[in-house]
Length: 461
Image 1 (tube, helix red, strand yellow):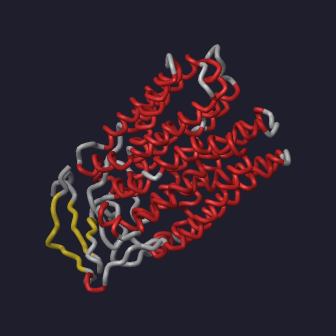
Image 2: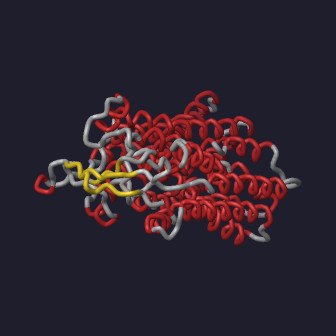
């Protein structure tokens, strides 16, 4: 017998008619453990996070060096977020059509990330900053984000919450060193060299990690987990009980017609807006309230750390207690923490300010892996890049509202009004999330599970 012969797979069908491709291990497909498809996306997500979470820490230096107005900083962040979210759906379509491989998407991301930092360092006027950082940098981050988040769900369809949360977390706490770097060391004498060095380093990290990316085949399911029988592993059994696989592989239009995807879009729009508002406003708010620059940087760093680690923790919790139930609590926490941030700053309480900042970071970060995993749970993995791209596209608006319009509200009505509005929106989202449900097939469309041995075939690479 030839030990090097390609492995075989077979397809089984559950009671809803959903197809599972089983028989191939991760090593059969990748030549290594699927854990690589957790660690490599994690490194890449950390690399692109500084553009969103550390950017406002460079505000004073960029304003002084280039002569830009402070308002431009918030709108630059808003434009970056706009394109980072806007590219998610078209990137998903390209990926799932086979026109854009995971590796190619990551190379595009690396190039655009580098252009973003070059523009911040060398832009002769603010237009080139909007073009380089806002458009190219944001688009690049969107390619990386969409590729990394959806990659994990494809490789861990049986227990995706914790893994998705872990990778998603890199998008926040990867920025921590750069928050301190930009706050404490960046100035008009060194900003060009420092920004260029950071850009080259982060782009190289994305490119090297992305070189090893590879998708599993459509409908792939890990060989050691029978999709038709309850697993003997209590962790897998509970995760699948609380978050059962989607009843079918929904196309984007089918997902929209359920009414659930549009509702998810709206909730993410609101909660992501609150998160971006906090990222954009916490540093200037803390400074205006009289906290020292080091304290503000510490608060922002703690926010980023908790934002990132909270994504992994909340993903694990959602595996245990269900995605929707966890989301309801997270929305409430995110909303209430906005009141606490403003209260702590108003009374000048540094410990409370740091605590409120961490809680706000936890809530703001946790929403993203929850929606990424929930989209696959509700609508399947095969079209998840496109379906989650639709949900995530709400960040197109939330970025502009959270950063740009947040700045307008602060300028006209003060921080108090802005934080109260943000908090109230979060609490309302907690109530709206109660109506999120996994779509079900009509009884007439369900079928008896079968194992079709006749469909065995060789895997073609």
